[in-house]
Every structure is written in C-alpha cells, then in structure tokens.
Image 1 (spheres, helix red, strand yellow):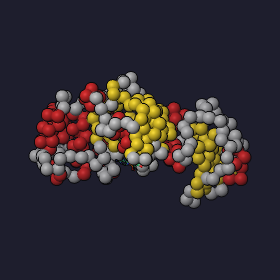
Image 2 (cartoon, protein in one colour):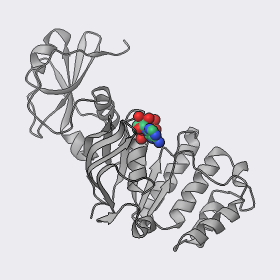
Image 3 (cartoon, protein in one colour):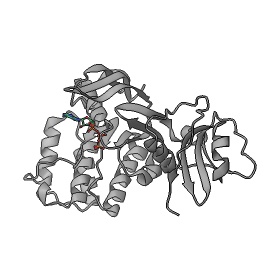
Image 4 (spheres, helix red, strand yellow):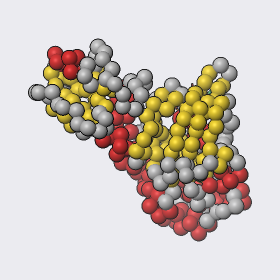
Length: 305
Ligand code: ATP
C-alpha cells in the first residue's frame, strides 16, 4: 500500500509543464522530505496528491490505490498548505467548530488537549496569534482529523527556529503515537535531516531522486584528494558532483553498494542527507540510479577557503 503513487503524472499551465512524467511510489510509515529548487513542481505535486488540482497527464492515487481527490482519499489525508491559511477573524474555538462540521471524523479532545499544551487560548482570534501559534493551530486542526497521511507544504517557512522546532516536535509525536505517514516539502535541509527517513528530490518538474534515506546514503560517498589527479580518477567513478577547496577536490560519487577502491593518497567518507541533497540540487541532470561512470571533464564548484 503506497501512500502516494504517481504514474506519468503531469500538470500543465498554458504552455508550461509545472510537473512532467512524474512517476513515484511512496511506501507508508515514512517521514518523506520533498526537496527541490524554487519552481521545481513541489507544490504542484502535493496539490495533485491531495486532490486540489487535476492532472493534465498520467494518474495519481493515494492510500493504497484510492484516486486522489475522491471522498475516501480526502477523508484519509490532512493537508497544511504554505502559510497555514486560517480564517483570521474567527476565534480558535470557532476554527475547531468549523473544522469539526466539515469533517466526518474530528477528535475534539485531542484538539483541545494539544492547544492547551501549547497555551493557545480558545477565545483568541486566529489572526491575533503569532506566526508560530497559527502554524501550530493549522497543524492541530489537521491532526485532529486523525489522518493516515499528513501532507505539509513548506509549513515552517515564516517561523523562527524555536517555533520550527516545536512544530516538528508535534509532527513527530503524531508519527510516533499514531503511525501517521508524512510528506513534507521544505527548503530547510538541515532540519529535514533530523526528521526525514525518505527523500524525494524534484528537478525541473520531474523526480530526480527517490528512496529511503539510509539506502541513498549507503550508495553514495565523498572521495577527497589532490586537484591534479581528480579528472583521472573521476573517469572511473560515477560522479554526481565535484567540489573544490584548498587544492583538494571532493567527489561525491555513487557506488553500487560494493566499496569502490579509494585511490592511493585519497580519503573516503560517508555523506549526510544535506550534502546528498545539495549535490543533486547543484546537478539537476544527474539521475539517482546507479549507472555507468560518466566520464566528463570536471568543473568543480569552488567552496570558501
Ligand atoms: P517553490 O519552492 O518556489 O514553492 P515549487 O517547487 O513548489 O516552488 P510549483 O509552485 O509547483 O513549484 O511551480 C512549478 C512551476 O509551475 C513553476 O514554474 C510555476 O511558475 C508554475 N506554476 C505553478 N502554479 C501555476 C499556476 N497556477 N499558473 C501558472 N503557472 C504555475
């Protein structure tokens, strides 16, 4: 049962494809980081998955084959869009009331307990809450529907570090307590590293990388060695991206799981999720699957000395 499954999914606005030939199968029980540069198609993909917009091509199903946007799909998914949209003139209690009336299942006890823990007053107008409190209210409303899948589109963009931390703590508590699957779009790579165990990178409207974080980290390494040898060794490696600093070249390579021999005088180390994502973001044409070495003249990105 995949929580989101897309096949040849595309969305076109006029002559522009916001998403194209997107095929993806996200298994349940993960916190999925959806990453990509501005305009890569993240919001478009999430809007298609939650049924806010219809595909121009291909199909998308959720929660084990249920068509996106169908009543059954809407019942099992909760979505928090960018900037936590709320009715600013309604009180928190009114927002609870409204959400309860619009949904078959709404756990009022959970909502009130959660807002109590967060010290968010029920009689306060939503528009008078701080940005962090508004985000927490939107998240609480979403989780009170007891969804199987929680979809979050850049929910923390305007929050300070403490509010972001608290927001993610609420998400992770729902994952631990209720087994909710989460798909989270964000540009905050360091934060995603702490919470995500599945990574999807979108580039130019297509899926560039998708897989469990542990698997992806296991098949990538950084080799570091002298600049003047880099091109010679790179010919034999599947290089995703090269960085240059202090007469050293750092090659982020894909391995097929077996250990690539480290050239004499070179060092090898494991990579972090942030490094992996940055490397692919810098190389939008690099695909995630292991393949034959791509012999090419390296043009390393210069890093601060
Ligand atoms: P960001 O990180 O900036 O939020 P994103 O990855 O979420 O970007 P989308 O918002 O999905 O990207 O946009 C993908 C592409 O589709 C962009 O080129 C955008 O300009 C275009 N696009 C999105 N929505 C519309 C729309 N309603 N009408 C026309 N073009 C659109």
